[in-house]
Length: 88
Image (tube, rainbow, N blue to C red; front, top):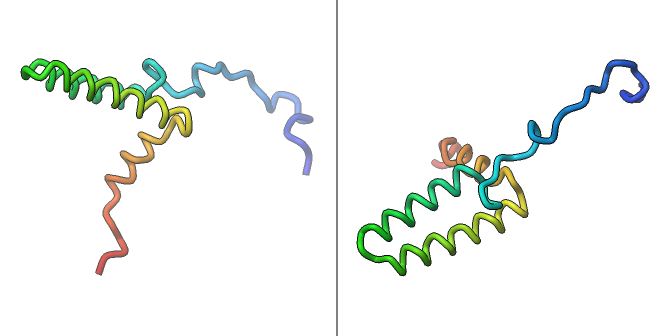
């Protein structure tokens, strides 16, 4: 079998923006929006300090998760939708 790099026209330039995950402040976008919304709800409910702690701790967790695997949140969302098939 031939190497794909030897076939003319087989390779095409792809911009990095099309392949890289969308991050907000280093955390996955959907996770950052959910975390920020939860922290704002807690903070506006009257508990400003716990809201800030939840927001900062959640964002740090999201950044650490994204450094390990940028698609981890999407994989977790997909796994939560799949029903358990091995139950009796």
